[in-house]
Length: 440
Image 1 (cartoon, rainbow, N blue to C red):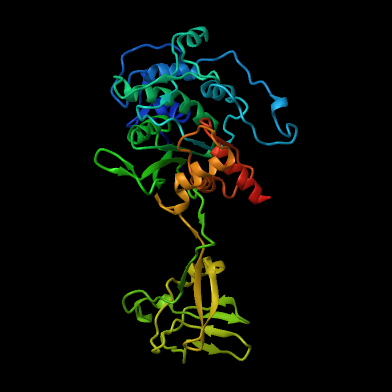
Image 2 (image 1 turned 60 degrees about the vertical axis):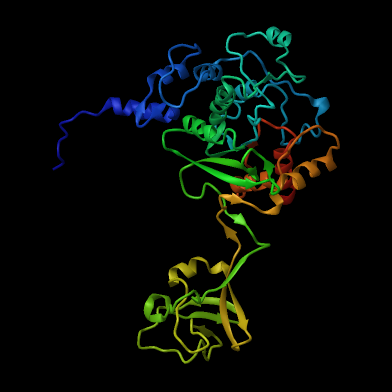
């Protein structure tokens, strides 16, 4: 007989769970911040800032993200190429407005967002939202519009709200960008040392609730270094934000630089058969190809050599070294079977036997990228100068940095939608189009 429950359902907990699902950023240490929730549901700037990760302008940024606009996207057929067949879109305009306009058409459909926002160096310009004026007249008269209609204001380090201005600009855009990501979508943000720490806190705010991983990758983009007061800076960062789960980030293809090692355990130490009896078994080879794997050998069975020739033409290969010592394969049979596609039969000419090697070509991406191809001068500035001389873009990313970021997310998804809402010199578009060309 089933036991009776003497407790009603916890409707409060159920409602909180629903709130967390819809607004993960309002949860701090397992509790709902209802002031922040009210801000997300309204369009008014109000109330005192409470303690969490906060700054001047945070509530205004939330209100701006939720405020509707009366604008639309207008196709420019005359300026386009292959309008009827292309699957690429380049949208000109204020990226905050565009993100709002994309909310319906691309809600939950974008596999990857890669952005390289303006770095908060104190010398360049950043976008700043206007939270009190709806018309563009004020912006035009004040000189806060660039030639494309984007809002620009200076943000020098002497400005009292140096970090706040940058965070406010980013926050409203990230809130809207999050809505566009698919359930397995990944956000990648390029950043330097000036805002790396605050950006991670901001991403935790936007993608909070425990459902996402945030990993900071160091990219050595300037091996010669940029001279600072105490250190010469050689790297910047690519921060990956992805849902928790298996294989959200794809494996790196290193077919041109594989890791080749004997399957027989030759690492430091004895590593004998007696140390791991389940790792001593035959691998069956015929005509130079692996055709199967045998059971773990009985303790009383001792092969006469590393290769045992059978009458049916099959060769049984055992992990026996040149001195006749019975050693072991690196892994047990079930593990070795799972990597069968990475194994190959080789001729050990020194011993006159057949042996087994593992050729590994796919690896997890490391959190430090220091290959020469990530050099922003060689594969960013100089590459862009060849394509567009005197284009006026300073410090573009290495094409290969962006290529590897895109591959890490979309390698097995040729239909993935990739979005960049800080296009700059168009390196993301270049990378995606190159991958499409490689895929045919």
